[in-house]
Length: 156
Image 1 (tube, rainbow, N blue to C red):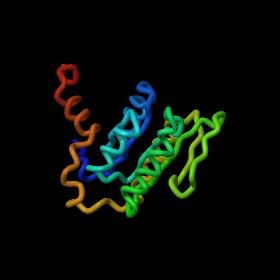
Image 2 (cartoon, rainbow, N blue to C red):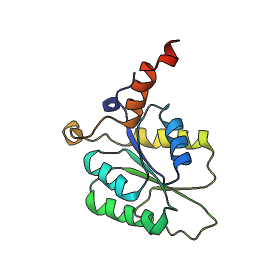
Image 3 (cartoon, helix red, strand yellow):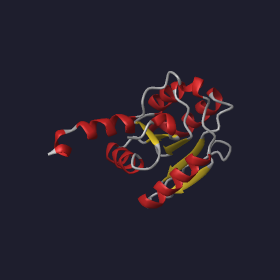
Image 4 (cartoon, rainbow, N blue to C red):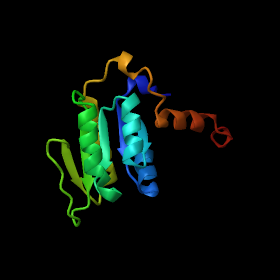
């Protein structure tokens, strides 16, 4: 079983439940530790205790929360090496500050390509020192993997 301490950690910020679950399901099978957030506030809480190699953010969050999250994250973590991938609907007027996002992808996403991009980008980011991640809980993907391995339907 994979250990999140050995893998780059990724945060998915997506407000649509079905898409967030889909992205989590795809990315948790990569050599990554994966967490999710349904809101910008939840994502900021997670970034306060965990160092992420990569954040995948939906730029179409309600109430202009996406650009606000990016600004707040940059202010709170000015030395972070986190790679930011902003995902946007090209039909909507979304302005993305190039100083706050490292890459921009347009919806709809090709899931296999997205998984490859996320994995490769996360792997090139230098991991945070272990002492900085001490208060970081186990990644959701690790918790899910433990649940899967302990489930009776897998042993029957």
